[in-house]
Length: 317
Image 1 (cartoon, rainbow, N blue to C red):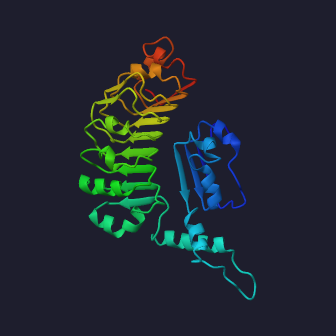
Image 2: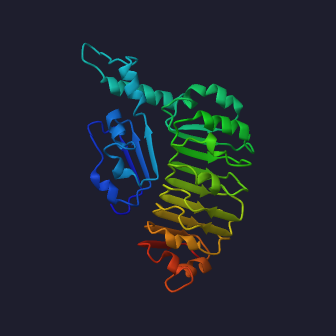
Image 3: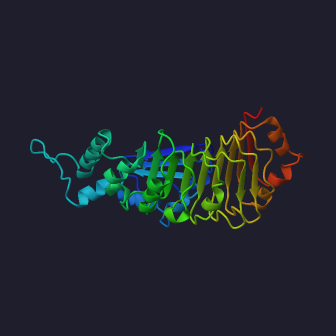
């Protein structure tokens, strides 16, 4: 499966572990594990037996793997008996209850807040402060978000490792408001005028970063030396105002995948890419033809990327 991009494993309760061969599928971008035993989930987490098989996957999400086990362990859910028979298996019954809560919008897997406001903080405080909350998404279509509310929320979410912000904001929260465990960040429609890289590059465990759809509306991005120490995947898409990207030697020393798409104001690749010898894949999509031609063999930017095994172009006209 050399081209597989998404993998979902759900309700395969007899499956004990992930296959070792997943570590060789470098195209895998998303892994969803849903309604699996807690022991299976635990094997995939950082530092456990199966983590090395999926450590390069930018997005790994779990749903319904812990809560079911907690309900069973606490005796909240017991097996049903029907007509003298043994009835439903306890975990299956708990799974049905979980799905009913989800359908009623009383509980969600990765927690999402839409049209964020201060009232959401109060109503959802038990979930937001839970140590089991590892993924948080915030959407807001009602104008710019109040940074005080956002800072308070993120300061409370001490265990999240995945954060998605689809909100307009005046500035990115300061680092002390962000969980040091953050491994994946997706920013979209934030309309940040100030370069977010100086803040983001200080996150010690960040492995995947996506700046998409007007996440940044300034003209210049800069990645400094020693910044992004563990970043493995970077995606810049639909940043129409971006004109210059600077990368210092020593920045992003672990970067393996880079995607640049629809940043039509960007004139060239940064010189600093030549120092990132870990880079395995470069995707250039919907960029001007002149940008593409600079990267081709023998042209101005080719020496910056000549060591990269896979360079692909798509829709560059």
